[in-house]
Length: 184
Ligand SMILES: Cc1cc2nc3c(=O)[nH]c(=O)nc-3n(C[C@H](O)[C@H](O)[C@H](O)COP(=O)(O)OP(=O)(O)OC[C@H]3O[C@@H](n4cnc5c(N)ncnc54)[C@H](O)[C@@H]3O)c2cc1C
Image 1 (cartoon, protein in one colour):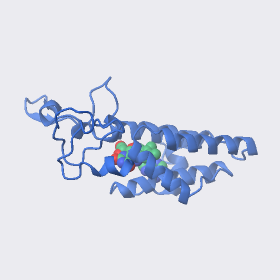
Image 2 (image 1 turned 135 degrees about the horizontal axis):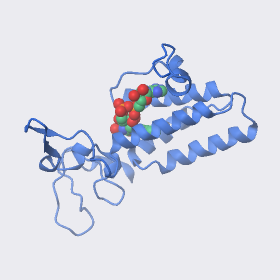
Image 3 (image 1 turned 90 degrees about the horizontal axis):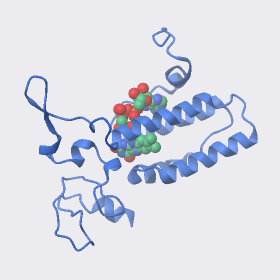
């Protein structure tokens, strides 16, 4: 069961090789395992995923610093995947019709349902599915869909202790560009 995998390493003693007959390997506290029992790249930050020695690199001044994300050309961590995914999701709301047909509404509901099931960070996906059960996706218009997506994103922002976004500004951020002309 998913919770067993998520909770298995809360004391930092969990093993990536549980159930595989391999010697236990101590994982950093909070490391999330994939459903295959191995550390999950897309569920953890790059810093958590790699060992300290691997993620420490020399800066231009020669001082070591901890890399903030995966090197270019490497598989995404939870943050890079999240940023790219939100860009796609909000951009979909931005190009959604002002007055969608019943077919367009149905397609977008299907897409969101499938997206929430196949999102590669499985712990994120489970919480997102839960959000979608409590907050049915609103597809009646571009603005409703854009607002709903903004609220969904804010739900994750709250969970991660991030600042909430002002949803009255979703269209400026993702469709028209800011009123001050900084995107023109
Ligand atoms: C469905 C989903 C679920 C996720 N669940 C988790 C999780 O459980 N745990 C985890 O660690 N990470 C999760 N993430 C990733 C997380 O949301 C962030 O993407 C990641 O932490 C990187 O954050 P960021 O600060 O770079 O900006 P992001 O949150 O990725 O936001 C990108 C940009 O979107 C804009 N923005 C911010 N909030 C809103 C909003 N409410 N509406 C419109 N625009 C907005 C801002 O301009 C921001 O710079 C999830 C991502 C997705 C797509």
